Length: 135
Image (cartoon, rainbow, N blue to C red; front, side):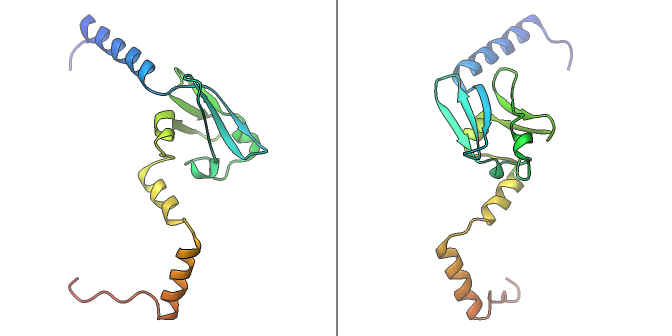
């Protein structure tokens, strides 16, 4: 690929400056034991909170482990050293609490009275119908 030129380096630094101004960044983060939430203070003055059980790598963490949250570098992410877990601030704000497979597992755990009633009704009919041959 060759050596980077000064122009390429300057362009990359400019993109980084623009991203820091445009993208949400964490100024501080902490774990609120009483609320059971990770609280993130953003550089724009907003606050974001989420339950750690939703986030990949934090599902089974203790309160002590969760309280060791660190803001990464320029505020682009959160890091828990003891858990070897990292979360992206833009991702969290977009509702992404882990990889695609993690998010799919979380979605499959969703329960509601309607889902429970549908499962009971389906079970009383003998369960899921078999697939037709060749389908």
